Amino acid sequence: MKLFLRGLRSGIPIGLGYLSVSFSFGIMAISMGFTWWQAVIISMTTVTSAGQLAALDIMINPGQYAAMLISQLTVNVRYSFMSISLSQKVTEKFTGIKRWLLGFFMTDEIFAVAAAEDEVDPKFFAGLSVIPYIGWALGTLLGALVGNVLPAMVMSALCLAIYGMFLAIVAPVARKSWAVLAVVGIAGALHCVFYFVPWLSENVSSGISISVCAIAAAVLGALLFPVREENGDKEVTK
Amino acid sequence: MKDFWIYLLILAGSTYLIRAIPFAALRKKINNRFVKSFLYYIPYAVLSAMTLPAAFYATGNVISGAVGLVVGGIFAYMGKGLTLVAVVSCAAAFLAECVMMLVK
Image (tube, helix red, strand yellow):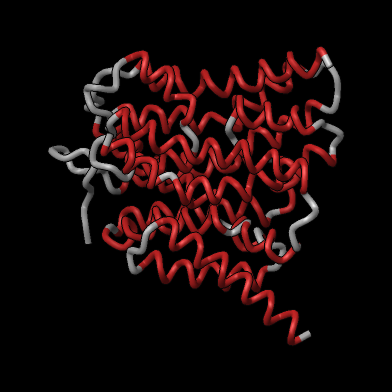
């Protein structure tokens, strides 16, 4: 119970961040002609930002099932790496059925917080998933129903919440480890290239470019600064 | 309408399986040093690629976005918790937008 509660608390900032992000997803879905309950069902069954955005674009045209599958696989392939990564950190209590159930909640942010733990108990992971999931569903509903009521300045400021959370996850580790700082720098710089070079930003979706940049940076990191043999998750520290 | 449910099935099904299959299938510890290192770095690399440069445009205004990120970055560097850093970033961006409105 203690672990569950600790997870619950760790999920609060993610939930707050999701509330604002899914709020804009709700607004977008309505503006593209979806109903409020369709937007909410998409959020409650899928729980992913980039994938859902890509899906809206495809769903407004009939019959593009293959395009849907291909776009989801490329946008979401990063989740496989996260699942593999986290499978190395879970306790023995994380049995098969719990993995099938809780794997549903493997979002970027839930993964990032869980990965910062020394070992991940299923109770902690379950607690961690609750508030982000509610935030994601509730934000979509609110965005779809009352999208344009909040002052624009409040809405736009809230969009930073998710990135503030990312900073708080990365900064303490990057501060202690040159290697992590280098990997973070490479991934960010590479993604700026994808963003600012016109041909790349026009032809490569953000889901794919995020995966490409992250994989390239992590491969470079693994080649240049391999983690120490005896201790898998502690690399050379400053 | 029929399309919606088929689309939903593909969308939710593929997203779920791509998350759950690797999580459920990998029961052994990986011993390959390269793979271990890659898996250690991948979460930070993903977060960084998602943040840069998108975070600067998240508020719709590069200046308020940058103010929020710098203030949030300072708090994050000091080791403050996720909620506090998130709230401080939003508050700083909001104040920056207020100031810019007054100056205009």
